[in-house]
Image (cartoon, rainbow, N blue to C red; front, side, top):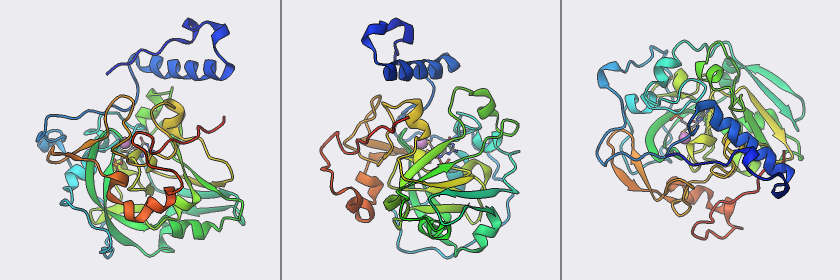
Amino acid sequence: MLIKIPRGWEIPERLVTPEEVYLNRRKFLVRAGTGALAGMAGLILPGGATLLGAKEEYQPANLPPLTAPRNPEYKTDRPISSERAGTGYNNYYEFTEAKDQVWKVAREFQPRPWQIEFKGHIEKPIKIDVDDLIKKMTLEERVYRHRCVERWVVIVPWIGFPLKKLVEFAAPTAKARYVRMLSFFRLSQAEGQSRATWYPWPYHEGLKMEEATNELAFVVVGVYGKILPNQNGAPLRVHTPWKYGFKSIKATTRFEFTDKQPPTFWNEVVPTEYDFEANVNPAKPHPRWSQAHEQIVETGEVVPTKLYNGYEKYVAHLYKWRPLLAGRGSSSVHPSR
Ligand SMILES: Nc1nc2c(c(=O)[nH]1)N[C@H]1C(S)=C(S)[C@@H](COP(=O)(O)O)O[C@H]1N2
Ligand SMILES: [Mo]
């Protein structure tokens, strides 16, 4: 689906504020780079058609095992997706936009050695090797639903630890209201990053402190009983299952504690389509597609979307102050730039 965005120079100068000029130029740059609409596409295939590519082709990476006891608290109403669905159908724009090819394109990425930095409103800045950090944590397995804003769903046995534990490790001060998270920038190892120069790399995301310390927010270092494969965000990524998948930043290099809402990647690229909060909400359509239904990657089943992706009991209290009116469930203030 293409939407026509007026080019900056087609808008009479007297009708626009400087900020609008800036935003329109930015949109134009995004579109100009691809010659078509860049970014996410909410495609639903005919019910029953798997979203996976050719079966023969997919090869799981040969990775060391990593196991942890499953936390029985987190259950889903559907079977766990196969390893091929969970690790063979991905979104990872640093590599490619072809979801069934990410595993292949990301194969040569070197996720170790890897340093993680903690900055901002914390007692003192920290830099730590990812494996030293993992050693400090108690690992568990959690089966979570993963719901992309494009409407595809996988049910994945993630291995990791609560993001709350990572926040405690960083020891933020009272000034910290948000956590800003950054991915890597490596043109030589990520072909999507070197080709798609119009995106505001590195990928960056953010959460409110109350969200980051909610019991559901998870740091992932493994999946399907192995250390995390490149395509799922090795060596370490975040997972917030009540939000659209784009909030779950992969290959994280930095956690920065801020007092202002940080800008986020997709919100910067298309501010009208992706807000900061991005809670799963069937009543709030994406401007280009409905969010009322979603499609299970492996089977192609089309099922109703659940508010907060089915995690209402854990997170609804965080958003209680705002009435959940149809179509207005998760508006949020655009960060100032
Ligand atoms: N660094 C980075 N993180 C990212 C993305 C990305 O392109 N780059 N895509 C996001 C989107 S849109 C989704 S749906 C999920 C996909 O996670 P999965 O491939 O492990 O299912 O990762 C999110 N995190
Ligand atoms: Mo996504």
